[in-house]
Image 1 (cartoon, rainbow, N blue to C red):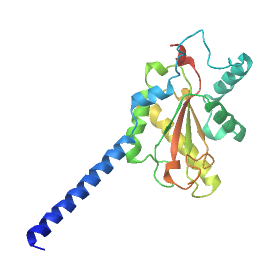
Image 2: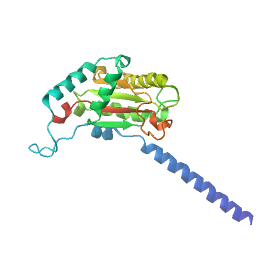
Image 3: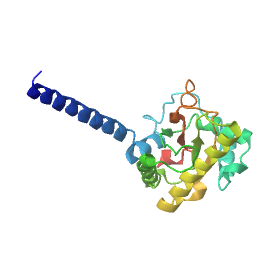
Image 4: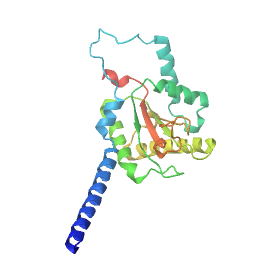
Length: 214
């Protein structure tokens, strides 16, 4: 093979590597969700026709009980929540507007990773939107399954508190509107890979429907 052919092959290889790196950066950028996407996910959707119902009407008694429970969570410290209260939050949240944000944290730390900071900032912008005014939000921290269950529970609580502190300090969001809860390793995003970093995340849930009528 001549030197010119070798040089051409080297250029092709370098170009391929460069394109691969650019593609990787593009994929990483797509992980950063926008404020509009968060807003759309958290804002309850109004029914298309007020006279029609897609399902059975909510029991007023059950609805009132749920509202009282959510109200009791406001201004509570994360670590004051009992296991039963955490499970009740999860149960109610299952039917509420929510978004599962891939906010990553440094390993064995409650510090937000630099790559995830844009997503946290977009969350702050979304929760500052007037369309979400009056709602109570749950900020739930999750870990992977590396380490002991007790350690991971504590870590998930600290991670949720980190997000709340950032949102209140940087975006002046009312702390009482943010209920923090930690689930440790108990609710992995990928149950088939409990030790995968993807499980280190934060879920944000709109716990009431006040915004639905605005």
